[in-house]
Image (cartoon, rainbow, N blue to C red; front, side, top):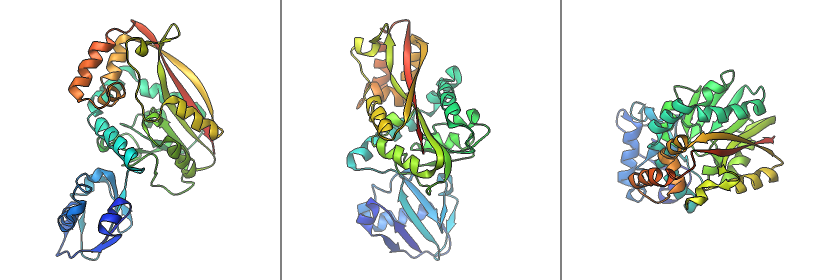
Length: 322
């Protein structure tokens, strides 16, 4: 059968290889055979969630890799799901791993506070009557409920998040928000709900979202600014700060360059809310990067217990017209 590669794998293996198959075997077995034939690509192929895989032109879901059988006359194509240079790819790998272990706490937090649903509602009025929406960084599929009158297609770097989102959205797939696997003019709108600040090449993500949105559509998103009380940054007062790949200042510069607009909205939250928010593994990494999870969660409880009883959680929303 023919197997084609795009990106780094093409430079290690070649753009196309031919392997012999007897009878029928699963897609995962094919990939395993390739890793044995080309040991220089073994590490690259160890986690297939980093690739979008098509069989005879049809994109496969990750849970089909074990069940889908291929024959000698078939053609597989492996396309990287994560874009960017070496630095960006490493950051995205860290983000992916953190969100892969965040699903239970993320879902529990959302059931308790409906916070991400609240953020999504801020975007809904700005998206208008869009019927087909791309949810970039879809998480567990919160937008499915908020945009119930629209068809929502989700994309997330975390395969575990996508696993849950598939039950809540019309479709969801693993992918990189800065290299969208869709044709030009495919959607009425694209949204980034609490995710643009986690994409290291956020400018590329916004431009690629504009590419896949039809004329007169929009690209919207919500993004974190900080926690405040009486005009002071409360995290700074306890010796902490956010370490984000694409912080709000860069978000606003990119939005301005694309002729977009922003608005601010504020949530009055209690200390318990903040502790729960940063107890999500992916969020704790924003305060304590490069630390093991257990240590991060320990520091969240220790440090954030010194926060005021209540504070302002400041977020903003952007809209870019296409």
